[in-house]
Image (cartoon, rainbow, N blue to C red; front, side, top):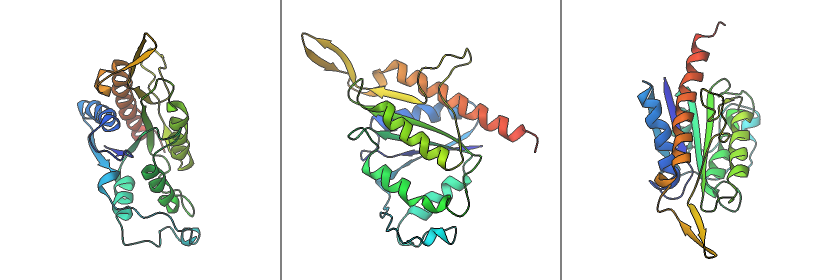
Length: 210
């Protein structure tokens, strides 16, 4: 079993990366393989709307890293997307990546049946996390994937996926901030639960009758 996490942050190794790493740590604790891709390390050209993918299952752009990333996605049993919130949306880097996967579902839904999940992070407590999470999860659903949430074994649902914030509290009308998302214990708990749920769902699919 292989779980692939894809970080849409422009900054490698920061808060969104840490959330994804926490998911993958739990995945590995349950005996599954895990890999994290940082989109900031890859060259991905924007979609040029040539509509090549309406005719064949492939993209006309071949001189960047998108084919490499797509092969990783095709080989994975589960894909976890992560993005910080940029103006109540995913980052531009994540959106370019999402646009370039168009060929994976236009002629043939290549990722259908895989497990998917999403994590998001923002500075403020109500900083657009829920909207951004829905955008990521809708992307996964449009690719025919089975989206899991962070509901624990007792059925308690904290969020759809995992949501982090740097907001700490308001003191004398001044906001205080966490130093890193590692101090957001609820977000890390959600990530660990999400990791367990991803592995459980993949196992259920692998043992389900044809």
